[in-house]
Length: 126
Image (cartoon, rainbow, N blue to C red; front, top):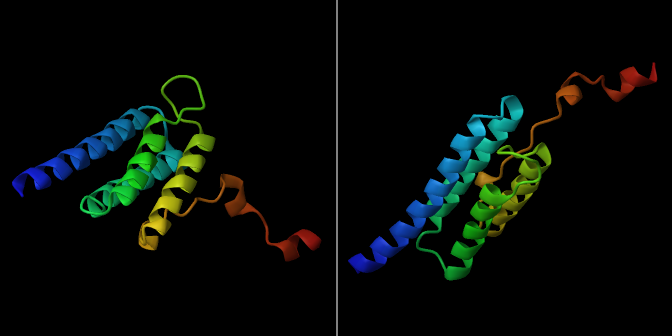
């Protein structure tokens, strides 16, 4: 029995280390809303990894795929992830959280910077 716990703990630790390492890298280049989104996605992934450690192989595989997508998805040059990549990772992570019955872990998107200051529709008509 100790072997099973150790085995699942080892896989869990590896995935969490991958997430942590990636976020550490992102902290060097992302700022503001993009960094906040990356941090929230990392928090969600860590929680999914821990909560599915003893789940079915299919559930664990879904979380592992989400972690790998977040960590390896690169659409821009250099070490930085583009906003589009984070948005794509967000969609995948949210889908995994929802399918695993964890809607509490869904990461809400941040409005675009200009959207907060945009006037309501009724003002635009005037």
